[in-house]
Image (cartoon, rainbow, N blue to C red; front, side):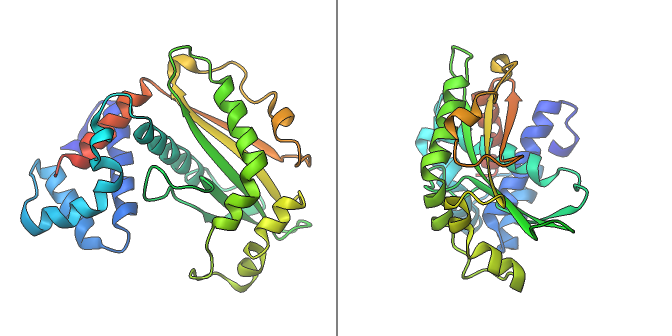
Length: 255
């Protein structure tokens, strides 16, 4: 059974595959159950059941390019999930709770912000704060991710307001005070209010793990200067591209 694998890498790949399929199937519990049961049993879905699950998995995991070695879209998508699961599962911070954290999108080519987290703050000057994240992956042979980190900060600097403006909230149920806050996220970013901050997450091969990663961030993201305005995350995975393919194998095993 996949859940009982003693190999940490395989277990991590399985956990991510399971989380992704829960998210991709969303309210379609029947599709998720079909995928899970077939995957754990080592079966291949056919007919209508195959068509149902395939429809949810295809956009990322079924495209022919995603089956080829070195496909950057798949590894980048897995990198976004590594960020999301790390952020989502952090222990609660004293005096603040997670109000909203956005899961990765449905495709590998979504344009817009990669991640957003909003905290509700207790007893502070602001009732809410948010951080907009840009996610990248690096698997270059040079094992030097500084260019990728620099580019991510520049992208956040130049396009952050646009990313926030592209996010849709009108169709979501939000508490009244939360709705008021998110209605002005773009304005808060443009005005560099202390309620808004930026973050960069980079998934990379463990061999490329830098000893210093974000010490020059302020040179490339210059608008927000309040304490805590910049945050960075390095997620190191041994052979990242191969790991992404391992996640795909779990997702695709029922298809």
